[in-house]
Image 1 (cartoon, helix red, strand yellow):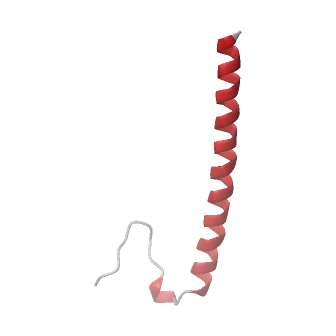
Image 2 (cartoon, rainbow, N blue to C red; image 1 turned 60 degrees about the horizontal axis):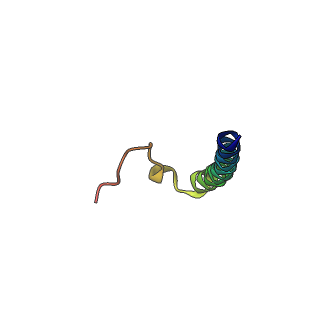
Length: 53
C-alpha cells in the first residue's frame, strides 16, 4: 500500500510538471511568433544558426 501511495504521488508531481512545461512551451511559442512577425526580414534565423559578429 505504501508503494502505491508513493507512485501515485510521483505521478501527480509528474503531471504537474508536464502541465507547467506545456504552459511554458505555449508562452515561448507565442513569443516566437511575435518576434518573427515584428523582426526585420533579414534578421530571422533558422534554429541552430548564429549571427556573424
